Length: 307
Image 1 (tube, one colour):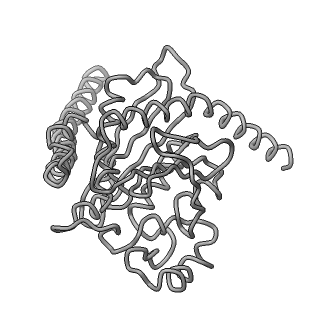
Image 2: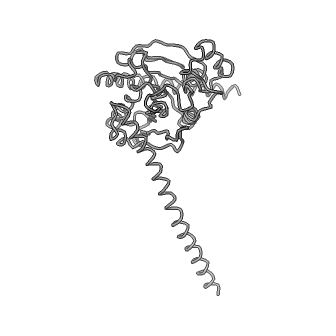
Image 3: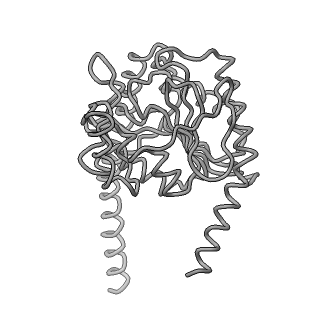
C-alpha cells in the first residue's frame, strides 16, 4: 500500500510539473516575442528617421529590451559589454546618447561606437551602452523635439538636491518658460529619468559619458581630472543646471560625468573624427578610471570610519 501510495503521489507531482511547464513555456515565449518585437519596431523607427543609421544596423546590435517603456510605449534599450573572465576590468562605464531627441548626431554616433565595441571590446572595461534615452523625442511625429513625450526636458528632471528650490524658479526667471527646457512638474517625474537613475543604482558606474550636440566642446562634472580633448573637441566646462545629469550625478553623487558636445546636431563628424574621439576617450578612461575607483574607495572608507 505504501509503495502504491508513493507512486501515486509521484505521478501526481510529475503530471502537475509537466502541466505547469506546458502553461509557463508558451507564456515566456510570448513575452520574449513581444520584447523582441518592441526592439524590432524601435529599430524600424530609428532607421527610418536617421540617415546615418539603417534599420539593419540597429537590428544587428541585438539591443536588450529593459522591459521599461516611455509614455508612448517605446522600450528603453541598451547593450552590455561584460568584462572577460580572464581579466579584471579597469572600471564600469555607462555610455548614453539621445537624451535630447532633436540632437540627431548624438544618437547616430552611438551606433558607430557600438560597432567599435562589437569589433574591439577587450574586456578592459565593463560597458553599458544606451544609444537613445529619449526615443519619444527623436521619433516625435514628423519633427523631432528636445523634450520627451510629455514635453519635459529630461536633462532638467534629474533629482538633484537643488531641484525643489531652483528648477522651476530657474525655468521661469532664466528661460522665460521656454518649453524646450521645462523641467517637469517635480523631480524624477519622467519614465526616462526614473529608468536612468535606476540604471545608475543597479549598474554602479565609475564614469558616465553623455553625448550631446551642438556646442562643440567637452564638458565635465565630478571629481578628479577632466579629459582636455576628445578628437577636435576641447574642454570648456559650462557649469550645472538644476535637474541636469551633471548636477545630479557629477555633483550630488560624486560620479564623473563627461559630456561630449558634438559640433552639429544634424551633421555627423567624419569617420576619422569619430575614431579620434573614441581613441581619446578610451585613453582617458584607461588613465583615470583606476584613480576614480581609488578615490571612491577612499571616500567610502572615510565615511565608514566617521560612522
